[in-house]
Image (cartoon, rainbow, N blue to C red; front, side, top):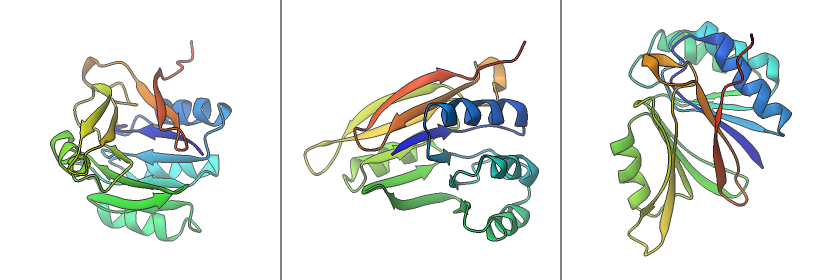
Length: 173
């Protein structure tokens, strides 16, 4: 299953939608958003893509009540978990959290195949040794909103192979 991993959109809807459109053209079947969506209207823009969205709120929370209500009205398209998410998709155990130190801690348990985070606006893909004697993949897609002078980026990858790549958000001229 191909997925698109995003974070830190900070209400930059055009960049968010451009990343999802590009990932969808590559075959993405689901979206993970690792926080700092901010306004419910930003998350609502993703509904038109008709892909399942798994999202958490991050530290720029915006209107949490409305984010929750939007997810309830999305006909099971938007899965809004709150502070963090623990779910299984395509046979893989996944954990989403906004903070990288929390992500590395959860990865070190060995309970997850993939842990995704955001917050730093800097993209990275790393493996973390875990308590089970193997390694867990930790992905930070950077900032899809291009916040703080960082480039607008997202991750695209495959849950089956756990292979991911950092991609720039295609900008319209």
